[in-house]
Image (cartoon, rainbow, N blue to C red; front, side):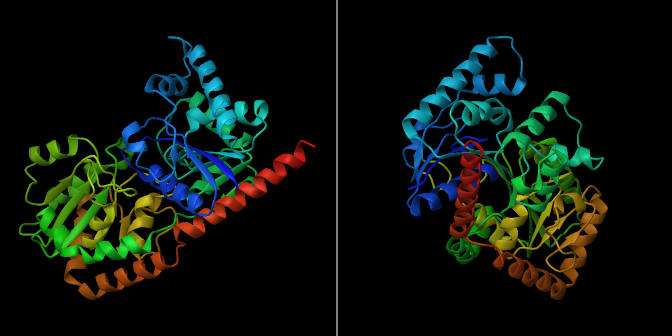
Length: 408
């Protein structure tokens, strides 16, 4: 039986792209007979009890903030010492044979020497783009500039990891830009849950009624409200739609700013905002939202990804598995979209071009149907989560074998 410890960047109960990946991997590892422990950055203990695998909340916000900031003020040095003994305690109690650090670069930078050198256990690092996309962007002359110390830590973490798992080709490029060796990198795209996708399609009419959609067409944007996600570009395009429009724009995000902006722009008749977005993974109890993002993909005729850059966009993968074509700029496409086959490459920062795209697709239903068929075919080519988890375990085995041989 393989013992695995996984440290995600995020925390429960909110489930974003990174947490969705870890949740599904943990379930499949457990089903395969592994002993899995997820060690989230922050977590609700009451929620953790309902998960089908062991979940041990380890951090407090002050710790992770201090490690991320890299400042020695306010006792950050003692915080790092506390981090070390907690990692060592978990190793002693759980005895994982491999640690998998997912997109948690500030924490990974602080943990990796403790695990590899002090505890003599191999470390696999993975990312779907949330931390490392800056390196890809800067390496290609675009994307936001960021603190040199942060970049140094990301590059240091990438170079010291025993194995690197990339969920998309953009992440592979970012790993290379960070100085990784080719033999360190494994490309393993996201998986998908066929039963949940089919269930969402059956609930399509119910979801439209719940959202209050009365138009023929639905365009969807799923994104955190962060500057690089450029939700305001979607709002600008929605404001440009001619009235009456065949399209309703559904935006799934977190926080209240987008809803306030929709009210300020008087877009209530064109835009539906889904706050505290539906969970990708578990259907939690305790009165928390049970709506699935897959329900939104099922009613959408089109997904628009306005992000400045994404190295492995979870939303594109999810859309394709739901048979929903994607409109994105060339950076957000991350090599996943075949133009005019399963989606369209458009300058999403230009509201006029986005609106022109929507109107042309509405007037050409045959083309839209062809794009949906292409997205469906693309999504059907992805592995399910059981196969993806098996490929992860193969990486763990290969990394462990190499790690042990190097220490003989």
